[in-house]
Length: 124
View 1 (tube, rainbow, N blue to C red):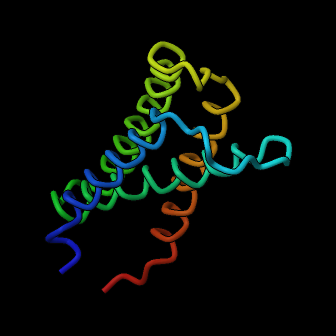
View 2: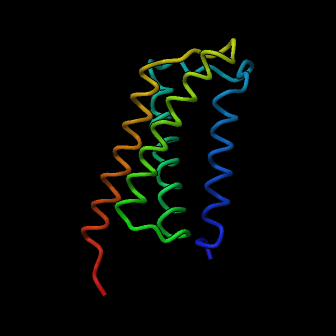
């Protein structure tokens, strides 16, 4: 049943991530830990790449390796574009290369995990 909604869920997640990345965030409590936002970037982009992989592989029946590669590339490029837009469109956010690094690491770890699960998958 989730396969039926995989693409819709993926689009909702991508839209929510876009909005959360570009909205004005004043009034939210500040987190006083150094670079804590990098953890959020890592998790958000790990999720983004996982959702896109699920949509391409399960919903649209793309081959595993192609779905994995495209979801990873799209997620990394999306993260770079969002960082650029933060620098150009917002007054409260700045483009940060460390955010791009955290995004890319999140995507990379997701790729590794999915590859490991593929290797341990029992053939029927």
